[in-house]
Amino acid sequence: MEIPPLKLNRLSLYLRCLRSLEDDGVERISSLELAQRFHLSAAQIRKDLAQFGEFGIRGVGYEVGALIESLTRLLGLERFHPLIIVGMGNLGSALAASVGFNSGSFQVVAGVDNDPEKIGSRVADVLIEDARDMAAVVRRTEAEIGVLTVPAAAAQSNYDGLVDAGVRAVLNFAPTRLKLAPGVRSKDVDLRIDLEEMGYFLTRSKRPVR
Amino acid sequence: MEIPPLKLNRLSLYLRCLRSLEDDGVERISSLELAQRFHLSAAQIRKDLAQFGEFGIRGVGYEVGALIESLTRLLGLERFHPLIIVGMGNLGSALAASVGFNSGSFQVVAGVDNDPEKIGSRVADVLIEDARDMAAVVRRTEAEIGVLTVPAAAAQSNYDGLVDAGVRAVLNFAPTRLKLAPGVRSKDVDLRIDLEEMGYFLTRSKRPVR
DNA sequence: AGATGTGAATGAGTTCACAGCT
DNA sequence: AGCTGTGAACTCATTCACATCT
Image 1 (cartoon, protein in one colour):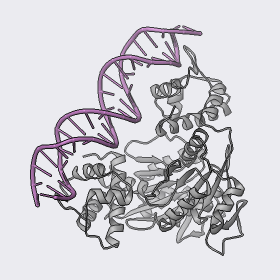
Image 2 (tube, rainbow over the protein chains, first blue to last red):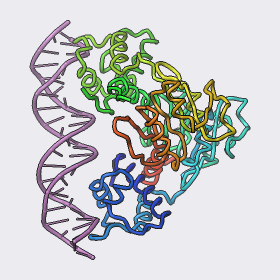
Image 3 (spheres, each protein chain N blue to C red):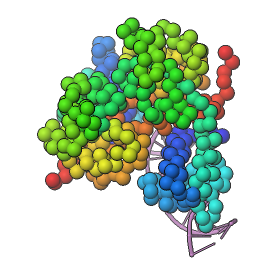
Image 4 (cartoon, rainbow over the protein chains, first blue to last red):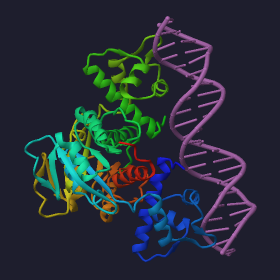
């Protein structure tokens, strides 16, 4: 069964919400209350969860602990997922040091760059190695997911290098359309386009009286 | 007329592609060739563009220069859009120094943080000011778009502060579900959820023979 | 009673295929 | 002849409303 990305992302979100509830000592919750607390849709929560079996108890709600466990397994978050960051500039370095990329089943285990000044130094425990050795670094660290934080002009060649080295998923921050390799999961994170979306709505919406 | 976000994002993308073509000296291009060069869908390009008038010439294609101009105006990219970054940690600082946030009609004009060590220093020409003065900073700089790069726990209060100060669009990098204010355009960029999507497909897809 | 699970209805978004223009 | 513009078909996603179960 193939879960569409949108639904998958919501499952990640539910899991995060449930963990927060668990920290607060909540043991059971209904779809309605979950929706209200985190600004989600109750019907959608039920539909999303029901697809994978009957996790809920009718008339009661969902058991927080049990549901966390089910979602964790469903999302493959018990397995460890090592990351390699390609391009240790400002953004790459920030991600290497970030909590989101270094907790749970994720950890940045390698970083490469082509700047001789950077090679050999460390950012938050991550040793920066020579980009020319990328394939060897991937093999040594068994990095599974590549994080592309290089300029647009260098993106395709580094993507190809990651794929050749055996990486099977890539998160691309470069503002360019990659020619994708079959069998490799890729996702673009295009912050410039997000900004332009914001900008558009500003020019369109009327300014409120203030 | 209200353009749905997905379509809007594609228009941004087309504009970027066209600019790259212009730099290469291309004056005319068909939807098919545009699609092939940048791995897009020709039918979708035509449909997206046709919605706003007849930009193309049947039998020929689109005039690159004219289309760039139309899209630029359509997206509101002739107007200047000042940004304020809230939370000058690693990610906030990286964005403050990034090209994408400091070119065309966008520029980071302010940064705030609550760390006394950082206040008063500069990151890439952006002076870091006291987060408590956020409202005054927004008014002085006339920042239009807020970029939220604070920890999850601080996100809601800083979001509310931005909105109260008059910011009308927010790009939220904090991994939390904000209670949104009416009339304010907001978008979540949740890198952790993007990562989990990658991780999921790794556990599901069979490893290729290598 | 009260909340889940789900078919049916609705809506959004994409692809197809070709009429119509240059 | 060739490529755009577009109605129609199709696929994907969300919401509704209620039968179903504890």
